[in-house]
Amino acid sequence: MIGMACRCEYCEMKIMAVKGELPAVCPFCQKSMEYTEYELPEPQPESEKAEQAFKDELQSRSGAVYSPFKLRVRVVLLILLSLTLGLTLIYKIHNVEYFYYQPLVNIYSLSVGIFILTRFILSSFYSAPPDVGYEPTVSVLVACMNEEPSIHRTIDRIYSEGYPAEKLSAICINDGSTDNTLYEMLLAQNKYHELIVVDFEKNKGKRHGMAIGALLAKSEILVYVDSDSFLLDGAVHKVVQGLNDPQVAAVSGHTDVENVAYNTLTKMQDVRYFVSYRVMKAAESIFGAVSCCPGCFSAYRRVCVLNVLDMWLHQKFLGKYATYGDDRGLTNYLLKDYKILYDDEALATTIVPTKWKQYIKQQARWKRSWVREFFFAGRFMWKKHPLAAIAWYLMTLLPFMAPIIMFNALVLQPILTGRSSIFYLSGVFVVTMLWSLYYLEKIGRPYWWSGFVFVVTYIFFFSWQGYYSALTIRYTGWGTR
Image (cartoon, rainbow, N blue to C red; front, side, top):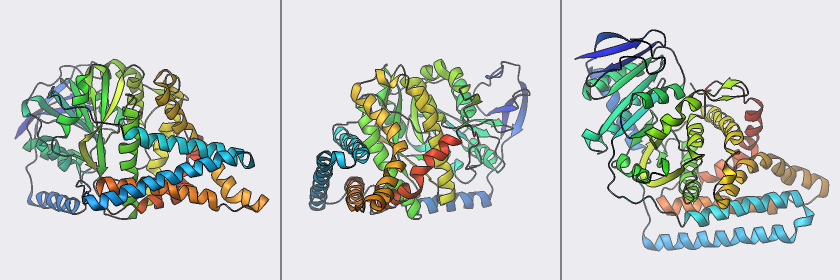
């Protein structure tokens, strides 16, 4: 199979297609492109076996299937949830009654308690954008580096999830990979002739990959999917429904952990992912103020992205170009003037880190973007709905207070006053039980206990990592590549 490629010598970028038109000039620098033919690789028995083994392994560990309990068990879980909510309220009343004994701790505990309770209450009123039969043209964009094991399956899921073929296109961007990612993309292109492959000969960063996809696409809607994320059936159709409203610029889909059963770390992330989506994003979505459309799976109105593309692509912080937090950054550029929603019925799964070292580096990168975007989004979030604005500022500021409060409650106060920290710890236990039981009741996977693993690691390590991230904010490396 022969394809046609065009290359920009200045940008060191090649665009490859079997079907469809290639640009006459480079979308980035507007210089003329050089045209050549290229030969697509043919599938080899070894590569087919490796791909099938990878699929089988993921299928055996998949977090895609929910296992809801029978009615009787759900009733018991709902009673336990209600009791846990009641206990949380009792602890907050205690914070008021004994306010002057530890005012700093009590202010923090009250703020955290109110924030968490309102998230659960608001999310109970959430409903997904209705299916109105909206079917615009869609381009699914995947930008990646060194994702040889998973990229082929990601592409397979794009073309098999069920969206009308005549309205669907896909663009995959190889961002200077040093493994066989490009080869796997071209293997997929041999199977799906409509696929466009972009090859950055040198690493430019995910933001440039996302940008070239937006510039090359000709569709109304852009759906960004990570190279280790997999769309479930009907995901694209569902995620675009919220964009039927012209005031909406983007919609976050719902992503679960694909390799959930791998180890304790992946189980912990599954609980965290579910609560962050189904509680936090659901509450934000009520006000059209979802604060981050994750790169795993989110849809954007293309014209809105193009309107902010140059500013976002060349975003700087403290004199350096932003090279991480691309999804949060793009969300904030759009949230300033538009609504951003969440759709819990548009489903995908993603592979999460399986080693603590990789996870720690990922969290440091995410926290740096969280710090950076506070200084950007903080300038306009106060204009949003008051409840959405207050929650956003609390969600951003409280984590910076957490290490000081925890150190005071768990170390200083017991030493200086002899007062036990058992009440503080029991409050943490009740709140953790609240979201762990919520996870268990909603999806039925038996990993609710790993929510406590997250809390313990957060208290002793990850809460402090926010300070490290703030101090290293000018570091521009990805960290996990």
